Image (cartoon, rainbow, N blue to C red; front, side):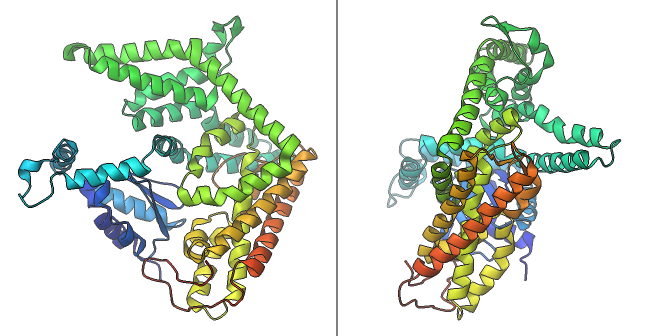
Amino acid sequence: MRNDPASTAAAVLTRVGGPANVTSVAHCMTRLRLAVADPTAVDEEGLRGLPGVLGVVTDGGSSVQVVLGPGVVGEVTEAVRERVREVPEAVRAQVREVERVAEEPGGGAGAQAADQPIGAGAQLKEQLRQRNATPFKTALRRLAAVFVPLIPALIGCGVLAGINGLLVNAGWLPGLTPAVAAVASAFMALIAVFVGYNTAQEFGGTPVLGGAVAAVVVYPGVAKVTVFGVHLAPGQGGVLGALAAALLATRVEKWCRGRVPGALDVLLTPTVTVLVSGLVTLYGLMYAAGVVASAIGTAANWLLATTGAVAGLVLGGLFLPLVMLGLHQALIPIHTTLIEQQGYTVLLPLLAMAGAGQVGAALAVYVRLRHDTALRTTIRSALPAGLLGVGEPLIYGVSLPLGRPFVTACVGGAAGGAFVGFFAMLGDQVGATAIGPSGWALFPLLAGNRGAGVAAAVYGGGLLTGYAVGFAATYLFGFPRRPRSRAGSRSDSGSRVAASA
């Protein structure tokens, strides 16, 4: 029976320190993404033990990702938002003040009892932050916060672009296809503005100023601007240029806020921010970002053309661990850059093979552990999502708790990636016109240099290879020689005791 989203939201908030401890709420296809003011208030084990929670990913800092699965994650996120919005601002201010005092030397010792260790909470928090919240992880988390909200639009517009391509090729509805093309293409034409808006919001600037400066990147009038003796092209630098422009705008705005008198702030700060950041974007960032973006496209094409099978094997084999750690979202800027340049990203079909290996491994577990009714029920419920490319339910519910099947699933993903990469070496590129879906859900978004039909055939062959190798590797090597099935051994936290590690 499906859990009530409101009850799940209330239970999650209780275990992350309450609604007042939550500073931001977002979600992707499967995960509720929370930012919290006090990471030490998060009960990670309690979160894992909640019904309907498939897994929890934290970085020791302010980021908490609760894996809920497709569909339900949107409902729970909205219920969480409602409860967070109901918290009075005075309560939030009090929480922020407590955090500020805790971070000061002594940890607010004057308010503590004499027999309590001074600053113990602050010291624990600092230890967690130093161990896990590294600059690299923080940068990846912030990149995800910029691009994850764009995924629904990328999926919707990508699917519409695919449908419109089919209509055009078939000669159907010629009066409608121009309108569908406009609807499908408008977002990608202006994606830089959305990236700029989200970047400024994430890094503490005024979102609309970030969007205004990033809009310079796609403005048609930049064609009249000459840099290094060459006219700029609208869209040059793409999302990378927009990201850099919005970051600069945020820095300029913060500099102005601390120096402009309050009476003139509303007039001078936005003006200086847009002017300075806009000019630097035109005469530096767009050109530099364009060079980087071109290098990404060239590198991706060269990698597949010369070492496609090896590249596919590595990418397909390592993607599941990235998903498990929540680091896969950091690849979104690269995918988006390739889509802007070539019309599709050649990396996503390779990475999608990891999900095929996961499905094959889950099927092998289902066959081998015939007497484990609880685990087989989990597999049956999670397998449809796995076939559609949503891997977290199978990762956290099946393969990762068992241990070895997670490794053999990676082997299946590597085999599928090598299959697709091998055909890329032969000149048959397979790409995706949008990001987000994988598995069978990616078929409507496939494209390639030799047409959608060839791309679909190669991609389908890769999926079948991933299924087969993932199944065989798990069936043969995913269990000890004398497997012991412990029916009902799954604990409330969603973990499993099995003699397969």
